[in-house]
Image 1 (cartoon, rainbow, N blue to C red):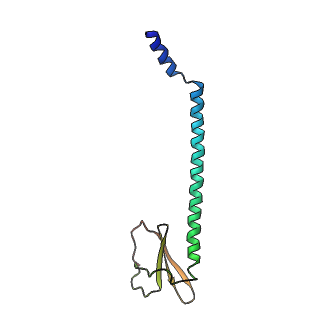
Image 2: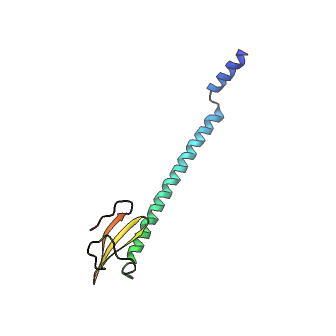
Image 3: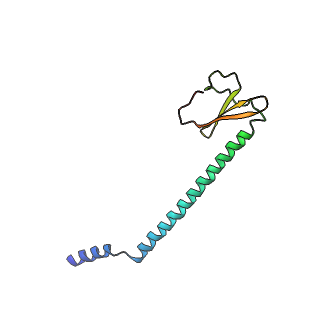
Length: 113
């Protein structure tokens, strides 16, 4: 009976070739999965940036499209703001130009200006 116990104990200590290869396979799979996740994050970040820039480029076509900025003190209607992807963009419309005043994450405390 003791001989069986020793055999089982020794057998568990020695790594078998199949187990070792399986661990290496999992490591390489984890590496590949991590690489794909990183690539997807970079792609999503680029698409978010592209969407925000396209939205900003459309402002001159319809400057009064977005609502009046509620955080601007003494706003006479020239300051407007909108949110996209949890990013708040405030801009000022003038007679010959549109100025981007502030780009801020919405999870931050809102600042009056």
